[in-house]
Length: 461
Image: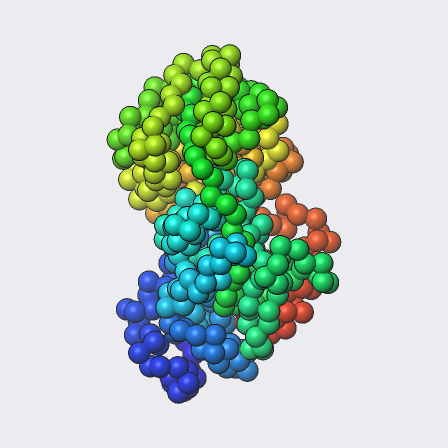
């Protein structure tokens, strides 16, 4: 716990109504959507920042007194990236949530970090524009959090992740300076792209206080195609055939039998849980193009022996996407805990990683619900268990290590869109180039010599 006089000092330059000091008020900030409650501490202080100036004042003060700073959006991340292993001051950005500008002429949005990603999408679409990043929690997660974790989503297959939609960032450095990175232009070759370095750095290099986002024209039409398969290989081979036939889906997602059953019990949208897996393909473009491509996909699925092919209407399609995005919530009903992981392999190895995850969890008697973005090789093994059960916890740790080793053996990585945070920190050093890791540490030290910005994340210094 920080000394009382240091805590009181913050109230001298921040509105006291925006400062939480009571234990019961701070306690919820020791948790997030991960299961890292035993690896963290309750923050010493929580501050609801309302302006760039608020952030500057707090960061300068924290740097002087070597107090950890933990930026926090909605707390929806899965790896403990906004938790407080060393205590410190949480910067809550829920009051810096404005969409400051949307320019149809320049096709951009200027937003504060606490702006909800879903609100940005809806506001842009009302003006005929489109902001593609769509993590499953986009209706509650924030732009700042998405930038910190380099979030993606189902539509990353066609449109890329949030890093592809950042034109410019305003950030506060560890010593409290305001720095603008990038420009409000479609091209920028003026030196190092430091804004791309900030994306995915989980708040360890600087604190994002404003972002300029690239928008694109909203597609005229969308169409979903569903196909059930009795084996994984047919499903993945069908996807391969789609991609070499001049078809450009916005998203290609996957659900295994356990996840289909769990989601159907939860959402009741008519999914068939008797099949081995479900492929969900979303098309977008003109009305004519999506109709034509949907028929092509239907024929390909028939060629690979899909047992049930559906082309739902718009209302049913939205229900299916909502059901797919509810997989974590649905799995949470099965046991006290569910841990949703995030791995990615080259597409040619997707069937191997799916079968491998299933076999590993069977080996350790763990219940697995498997979903993911099969189009780009990114899957989310959702392991359902009771972390208070010592045997289950040990089995989970062993299974996780084996899944990560298999991912490496298949030339993949242990994080595609969730980040590293606390949860994957001990595994990172075994999964990336040693020299690259050392350069990452040098970059961290250059940006944050006193290690006050979200310490204890990504790697140990």
